[in-house]
Length: 277
Image (cartoon, rainbow, N blue to C red; front, side, top):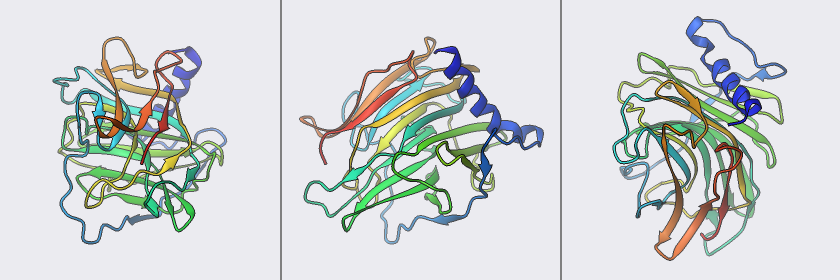
């Protein structure tokens, strides 16, 4: 991990964990937006399955991207303290037989092999010939919430972070680096005693509602500055003491839906490319 990106990632985590000391530190040049939060409608939704739907090794029915953990087969609980990363809001195009398609981009803790996820990101959908973009967070298995006043536009640089600060409390925050604004989710929404804290993820997802929804055709999603704190070590996705795995989203063994590239820039960067709905 190069020094510039490492310091940048560390600064993000520190900026969002200042709540420990009870002091608000504004990132230089950024304006804080107080969250306006509303539930994302799931009317009539059936009980949801495990958040990550594995297909075979290194593949998933709904995730593509990267996961890091102490051990992928048996990740240590309570080992992940923080995760952060930056991505560019993609352009969505019409494709396939579905008139409405969906995609989410997020960073988070848990979900690879545990039944909880603490995550924040953006969603990019296509409906009636129009792309829509929203900011959201979720403390799965609770339902997701939209941050309805957070600006998200094609081409914007977005940074997300999830940080555990103790006593079941997580700090979830989102930067729009293009618009120079950020939001921190009130901890009344982000407190749980059930999180395993066993993995860190950087993911493009096909959202789930009564089944995995049709995946939007997105322009390549470029992740950068990806970092985590695992066992009190700050590093990139490929930090040596950890194990990591790339996940290709598949509909079947012969149909990759979206594909992550190899890691670059010392394990901080990668690109997810759409392939099939």
